[in-house]
Structure formats: structure tokens, C-alpha cells
Image (cartoon, rainbow, N blue to C red; front, top):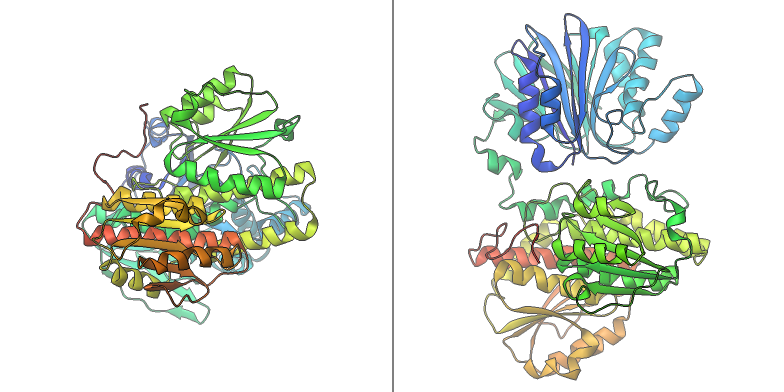
Length: 602
């Protein structure tokens, strides 16, 4: 969830950039940088870690008079968090910042390197600036060179480029990643969301996919595939908190919608054409490992539980899942042939951290899956995989759960590759399903509207059961947790095959059952279980690609070719259901009572 700012004008540029980047901190970042052209010369500063480190580096610098400037906060995707990998990226006489994924960067990079271009970073972004300068060295026309560069890029991007070859201009392009242009007299601003320019610009234009152009002399020239085009400015919002939400009612709602985008970040550089690759892992970590033990709390426990099915099914390795708060006090038997995996959104979860320390004392190899680099759990572990979910402000985790589940799915295949327990046919099936996952996470407007209408029917009663089988049992647990966290209604997840062993005694019209009924996994068994509940006159909401006539309410899903695609699509539906019920009840969705985002106590 990187952030972009840019400014063309006569005001002091350093503070505009730094203040703008400060407003983008909520998106998450691990490094930051700025580049400015003044007196026809480029100057740049970069720093790893908090933005204060960049402020300290630039404390003796100020920019005077007219100039162009760009800034960026980076969340590491290609390459580790280092100054070399931080934006802006440098060519011989140009700088670029970029959000998104250049899908064909490796082919472009190989071509440029073959021509003698030297790369300093591990990022896809650096390809843009070198490609621009290659074009400019041929035609000596900055605008044409930028157009030729954009024509070569495949994937999602929002990018700003400045160059000594045309020192009064910012070139820009947008496709897939958000960016807007702000206006105040002759001053022009760029940003990846409203907040950096509120209070500075008075009007804005929100770029559409496929638009590009340049800012010069207080004016914008805008183009798309049909050539130059006109555009209409609109007034900027004045509420920065609302702007951070990008127009959504709650951060949780925004984060549900972000899941498709951040999943691309999670997979980037890891899901390759013919394998799963984790450049952060040393294969020696898995030597002499015959068993996996996963330890986590809450939502992270549910992602762990789902992954245990995948580790045993795909990697053929025994996998046990432990609740961290229980693990510490059960006097567990720990063997050094066990890989100990901990999962935490914040990396500071006290119960999980203490469980990790216990495993380390017992001599186990350790791996953490986390969203925050340099957190306590990451530092304590032998190795770590970052989920790249960006900052999650809603206390009830959504995109954290989605990205954890994806990392664990990828890890199961990675281990299977190392153990030679997966053939090419199954590997290709899994990789193809992974590539479709971002589409399965897209929130359809009609679906959301239906969830809003349905929610009014589920505000009362004496409780909810979320039921599912196999990996959909942990998803049922997670769906129930989301609902109880923010609605304060009683809900529990249950294996659908276990309902007849006791809980079905509760079945009546005031018991709401949310049935996860995937077509690709045990459908007939699940259908039979739900029919038993319907026969007891419980109220049933069925979620399935297959119509179910006995259900009181039915939500038809799209994907039915692979269980994990159904898993992620149904995950979004249960998140929306919890969200809309909570909103109807008038609750504070983002800050539910009695809960904290990072649980740092035992």
C-alpha cells in the first residue's frame, strides 16, 4: 500500500512532500524518499523506517523558487526494505515513483541489462526510469519518450517521473492504482489519495485508468488512447479522516474492498510461472523437518487451521495447530524435527510471542508470517514472510486474514516442492487458481447491495451458527468471529457434520444458520447436513454456486473450480454480512467495544 505525492510550484517543496507523505502513513510503509529539481539539478533523499528518519536527513535542506518534486512511501514487494530499493528510483538524469505492479518488468529489465544498463535495486519500478532514458537517448524528446515508456508497461501502475531533460515538468500515468491531481491557482499537486493535499489544493481531478500526461506552467495536459482530452475538476473534501477512507463509511469496509488489490502485492514475485518462490527463505530451514506446528490467536488461528488441511493434503507433512494462549500452559512435547510457525497481523501478539520464545528455547526452527516488518515476532524468528497487507485500521481483521491465508497456501506448495510431493499437473492447477484469486476477492456492487438488504432480517434471534466442512470449517469460525466482534450478537462456527452431535438441539426459526456450501469440496455431504437443519425449521442462509431450494435466503457464488477460490469468495460474503448487520445496529464498526487491534497483553 505505497503512497505517492508530487508538487509543481513556487512554494517550499520539501515540507509539502514530507507533510503529504505523513498523511499517507496509514497505508503502511517501510521506507520513504523524495526527489526535487531546483536550479535545473536533481536532488534526492531516502531513508528506511519511519518518516522521521527522512525528516532528520533533510533537516538542513530547503528548496526555494519554482521547481518540481515527487515523494513516495514504500511497502516492500520486490526486494527488501533498503535505501537502494526505496523510491524515488534514479536513472542517469531522471527520477520515478510508482505504485502497483509492472507485470512484464523482468522481460524489460533483461532487455535493458543486455544493452548495458546497470540496475541498483531489486524493484520492478527502476525499469520505468531506465526505459524512459533509453527512449530519450534515442529521440531527445522527453514527452515522446514518456509515451513510448508507458506503451511498454503491462500491469497496474500510478507513476510520476521528473527529468533534467525537461526540468519544469512532471510526467504522470495511471492504470489500476489510484492517483489524483490537485489544483490551487498555478500550483499543481499529485497524490495517491485525498489526504496529502487537503488544505493545500482546492479542487481535484481523479485520474481514470489509461490516462496519462504532464504538468507544466500551472497547466495539465491529459491524454488517453484517443489523444488529448478535457477534464472536469471537482471540489476536494475537507475531512481528512473521511478522505483516508476513500469515501467508504468505515475503514473495515474499505479494507474489504482492498483485498483484491493487496492480494496482488502478496503474490508478487512469489507466484511464478512454474513454481512458488520465497526469496526470503533459505531451503535449509526445512532440512530434517518432518512435522509442522502452527501457533496463533484469533483470526490468525483460523487462517492457520485452514492451512493445516493444505499442508497435509499438498505437502504430505503432519501439521498441528495450537491456540497460543493455551499452548504455553499445556507442557507441550516439542521435538527438533518440527518447524514452528507463528502467525500475527501486528507481530506483537503477546501470547504468540511467548509461545515462539518457548519453541526457540526448545531448539525448534521458527518461521513467522506477519504484516509488520521488524516487529517483535519477526525479529525473534529464524525467518519471516511478510503478508504485505498494508495498514489495517479496522479492529476486526479482513485483509490480514485474506493475505495470511494466501501466504500459507503458497507456503504449503513451497514445502511440497521441497519435499517432491506435488506433481506438475497439481502444481499448475494450484498456481492457476492463485492467479484468479484477486478476481474472486472483487466486491460486486450488486452483491453488496443484496447483503445490505438481507442484513435487516438478521438483527434478532438467539444466535448464529456458521457451518462448513474441511477448509470451510475454519472459514465458518472466522465468519462467526467477524459477526460477534462488531455486531455483539452471539455467533459460533461449527463443523457442519458435527451439528447432529448436539448443537442441532438449538434449531428453531430464531436460530440463524449461515451454511458454506462449496461445489468443489464435499458438496453432497454439506448439503445433507444443511437439510437436517432445515428439517428442524431453523432459518438458513446458504452460500453456494449451486442453488439450494430449502434455504430461506440464498447467495449464489461465481467460482466453483477450486476450493480456495470458493474459500476467498465466501470469505468476502461473510465479511460483508457482518459489516452490514453491525451498521444496521448502529455500532462503531472500526472500534468495537472491549477490543484492541494489537493484543500485547496475556
